[in-house]
Each structure stands twice: as structure tokens, then as C-alpha cells.
Image 1 (spheres, rainbow, N blue to C red):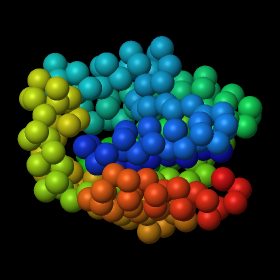
Image 2: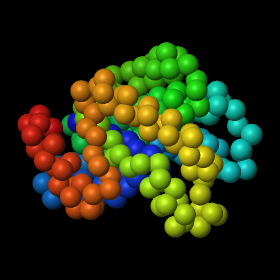
Image 3: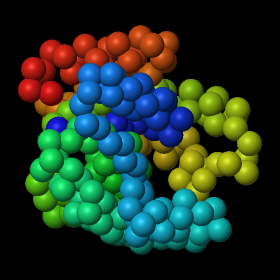
Image 4: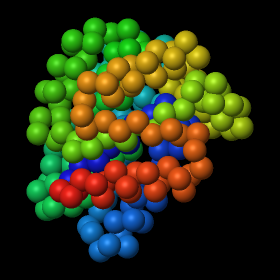
Length: 205
């Protein structure tokens, strides 16, 4: 069982993932939480490169390929082996992030980005994806509450970039049945209950 969470930065994904992890733990289901980029020793080293603000000169193609490299390691080392054990795998971002951020946001060929993701994830296709949607104005507001020293390279992106990324996510949500768009401006507990309701409505999950 593979569940992914997507959204703009500062959308509240991590909070909802922790609540969902607790939900499964309370039901004695084996569950692991992973993050992207990262999740393995190699992938975490790639994460450091991707998010370091010292690397502002990184070109979009390099960024996309580094995300793909991190994902390939995670898929083969963690995701597929855990799914084979019937573990609930919850991922903070997955391949849809690359389509939204590098395809729509950076303007790299969508056809190529999608083809690369298909190659990288192989059989590790999410059963369900939650897109925690917030407007870009809210991203800006929440970012303003955080010390500038804690903002990473991706989070330093401007509003035009985030508008393109959000548009990309909404386009994806309209074409993939596994997508569930959740209003991220709702109270935390309301969002969590909606996520649980959706999961409980799908008996196989």
C-alpha cells in the first residue's frame, strides 16, 4: 500500500503525514514514512546537494536528474522491498513533484519529465495521492514566518514559479484518478479527518 502526499512548500504535508502514521499505528498496521528527496544514505546526500542554497547556480536539467537519481535509489532500496512485505508506505513527495516542479515550474519538456519518472519508479505507482492545496499567497505568508536561514534552495523560489507548480499539480489531479485534492487552508484536524474518510472509503486501502 503506497500513499503519497504532494503540495507546495509550507502546505502542511508533514503534519498530515505524521497524523496518518499515528492513524495506522493505532490500528497495528506496519507503516513507514519516507521523504523526497532522501530516505536512504545515498538519497540523503543527494538531498543535501539539491537543497543547499550555495548551489543557486544549479541548472534545471541537473536538478531534475538529481531528483531522479535520489528517487531511483529510494524505490529500489526501500519502497519496493517494503511494499512486498505489505507495509503501508507513506511518502512525503514522489514522482508527481518532479512533474509539477521541474516540468511545469522549470519548464522542462513534460513529455521527457514524465517518461523519466515512468522509468525511475517502475512498479512503485502510488495507490492514492493527497494534494494538500494552498494558494501561493499563503505560501508567501507562511514562508515569511520562518527565519531566512532555514529556507532552502527550492523554497527560495519566487511566486511565478509556485504559480506554475500549483497549476501543474491541479492539471495532474484532473487526469489521475488516484489524486485527491484537499483544501490545505482548513483546520489541521479537519484535513486529517477528510484524509481518513477517503482512505476508509477505499476498502482495499
